[in-house]
Image 1 (cartoon, rainbow, N blue to C red):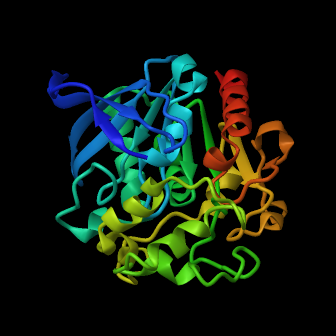
Image 2 (cartoon, rainbow, N blue to C red):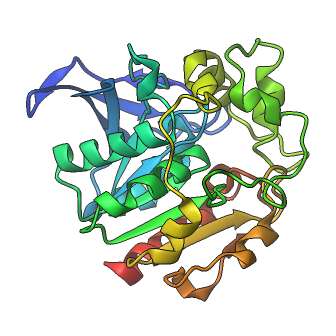
Image 3 (tube, rainbow, N blue to C red):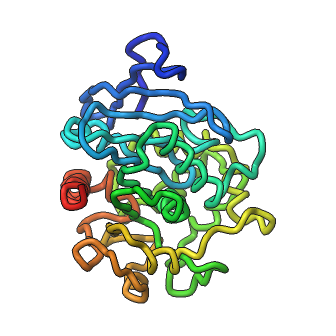
Length: 303
């Protein structure tokens, strides 16, 4: 998956902006315009990619060592035409700059960034959806987004603090890469493959490119004992007032889906986790049509 610029940068509310297009995969090229704005935040210059859809805004937050390109099949789809999707690149990822201070990395810091962007973009009433690490960041931000319409997570098991990992994650040889300050070109494809159903092959080169682009300090900060503590997500989920949607790939290689049954989730959308067949850790890519339909239904129900 590649970026194609369709014009020079322009000014948008004081921020540098440009028009870009997504190429979802090498075999099918379907270009639709997405507006990219660079927003200067406390953590650096943050790339914000928006579609032209209407209604309640939906902010999409990617996972570890990824970028907004992981949401190409949402941005470049009828869902993106219908709804205003806002996909951000976390600091040290994608088109955002690396943070000058590693304390701008980590769950707590990413939660602060979501709050900052929500206020700067005027979307505090939006729906906030996070994939994997991005879901942890969304849970971190919930208490400071009282006007939010709803929240969604996938590939994200709400963690207690301090974390108790037994019964949450499957043992997988790729897991150590999650915290590795350096991932080699040979290791990156192994790490990426863990995000998909075993045997899945429709993986865009951008996933590996994004791993190699990511600032290794961002991964290392996730296990830094001196990093700012994140909120107890089990308590956060149990005390939510807004609807919470949870999507989960049936063929996950990393997260044990039975874990969710152990949690208290009083605002869980439809009263159950939405299981997506034939998908692993990245259902938004593996089963985009099904994922998009669920996300659209969730937004419709809560707006």
